[in-house]
Image (cartoon, rainbow, N blue to C red):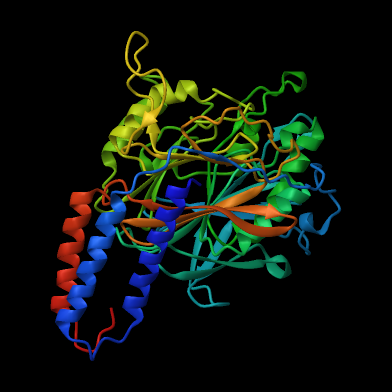
Amino acid sequence: MSSIEIDKYLCDHMLVEICRSMRNLNIAGCREGIVEMVLHILVLVCAALSLIEDGNAGLTSSFIRSEWPSIDIPLDNEVFAVPKGYNAPQQVHITQGDYDGKAVIISWVTADEPGSSEVRYGTSEGRYDFSAKGTHKNYTMYNYKSGYIHECFVDGLEHNTKYYYEIGDGDSARKFWFQTPPKVDPDSPYKFGIIGDLGQTYNSLSTFQHYMKSGGKTVLFVGDLSYADRYQYHDVGVRWDSWGRFVEKSAAYQPWIWCAGNHEIEYFPYMDEVTPFKSFLHRYPTPYQASKSSNPLWYAIRRASAHIIVLSSYSPFVKYTPQWRWLEEEFKRVDRKRTPWLIVLMHVPIYNSNEAHFMEGESMRAAFESWFVKYKVDVIFAGHVHAYERSYRISNIHYNVSSGDAYPIPDKSAPVYITVGDGGNQEGLAGRFRDPQPEYSAFREASYGHSTLEIMNRTHALYHWNRNDEGKKVSTDSLLLHNQYWGTTRRRRNLRKNHLHSVIRNRPRSESL
């Protein structure tokens, strides 16, 4: 982070803490005028902070980690343990099932026979007042035959409610739980985790375990799941199974929002397997129809105060293709008054200063970047590059081959681009950054880790990238994001003025701010 960015972050963070403290104070004995004066001062501080510009000097971290070997964990390791019991459900995972967070899709595998595809669920532990019936299927990959893959759609849920669920039969039944998100509302706080290119190495395990302690409620996964495609023949399917058991400790209890990467394509002519995304599409459903998408690889959801758009880097996206037409319409459906935070997930980064995969996102940038700026996307998360990088708010939308700026320029309407392809897979780190560091690059480091995005309200969100430092989680890069819609000076001023005056005018005498 530049010194200006650090100062801005610290000031913003201090402001947030002051606001939190004000809410916690018992101001019953304070005069109303004093409270109003303090709140006005806070508004002025916010206005002053909004004038601080991002610095233009990026930082390349000098940290060099002594990583564990980038090899997959042996199959007999306990992290891949098959649950006890005949035909016990395994590889359990959930994802959001509808547009607004009142449904989930629960998936699992039974190895021996189909068994039941029913989910029994309720709001009290051990008491299941409701049930939903699902379906099952399987597939083959060369001489591998998958287990029975179950998929059950559970809808009609209440927001902000903990549900307990049970799957499987008899003594082999297994019990889990999940928490639905708050209702779609501009001030619903929520914390997301962001993981990419995870794989199943010891570095992957470190990333996964650190995320599970982060307090994140939903994972935004930016592609490249199991890296099973680095195996051949029967072992491809085996490593999909092991990965499903690997992530179950989180994925069975909270939604993972899936974005497909290149390692999900699995184009194997030597095995006569040429159907792209075959394993991924059989194992990891998405709620694509809820957002009127025609394909499971691109879709959108709304969760709490966020509108999340998932794109497919490896499906046609140029003008007039189904993905292009869908995204054109989806942006029109975004309502920033209800979901102020607009987040896009993709696998291939648009802005990347690493030698690995440099410029691979250029075609998608040419197709979609003008929309990202027009609709003021807050942040775009990508993976693919096995390192971490964050950009400033920049765009390159004025170049038209014959005229205009042929390079990125600062743009307050543009997203922040963040690459988190550092989950820990067996291909290792991408340690060769381009020199000199481009002006659009704010911070970069070749280390394993994960990110979190904590939405606090409609105007502010706290972002952290956490490095896996010798097996410990270390918060290495942080940023306080100002919402691109509500964060504009005029909107923020009107919002604060009306909201704070309303709070002061209508609060009970004994209420704490």
